[in-house]
Length: 329
Image 1 (cartoon, rainbow, N blue to C red):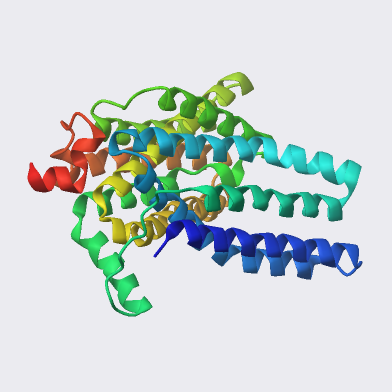
Image 2: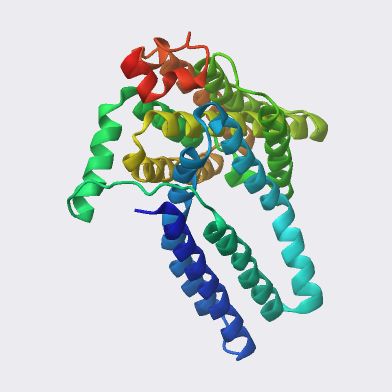
């Protein structure tokens, strides 16, 4: 399988979805149905594109630079979260929805062109078996790797408990992403974080405490500072976890393992929003946010006591956790 070509196909299909929105808008038949149809079609494409994108990185970047490469990936995504809606709103106001969808469709050409221009990317050799067997192989590998499984469950559980976004005002989301961009800049400038498993745990633990601090903050300035710090912790934990998954997974299983990671890392915050919304309706939002943040930090500390993680807290570099290093070491 050539991940580069897979991404080119998914990008082309996503461009087709954008062109569908152009066509329905220009024809005057656009409505809620067309937005739902585009979202329904785009979701599965993103589910293929995201894992292939991350799994491609170890094929073109040395192990010692994977952490920085994934940091850059996270940084671009967080920056796009902040800047993208503003650009979209500007285009809609001055050009209209149809032209805005058209500009969006054209942006996919840049990505497709870059993918086709890449050289020296090796195709992976996928073992025989049907698609269901390959999915089962990915799950079997994740279950056979306690460190990976626990790290992914740490992400899911803490985000399911600690996500305050369900009760955040819209503009507070932007403050959170600004913190994430700042964290990405700091992380990306370093050659590698020493004792990465310690920092992985601290990132999740401190993010939970920052969420509790946001809920209990006596004024807006402290609340924004807590959110910004939480964004820093969020991107540090995200990058270290993604790096761990890429380094410990054999090449032919990276896509499937990354898909599992994406499913858990997406499902955690979504579950958290439902859960905190329920708690906020029973208690006051301040109590719900503080409880969730403290519970999230407690869970992170508890995960750190489990042997697969505890035994690796002394590891000095993330590359020492690569599957080939532990196998030969």
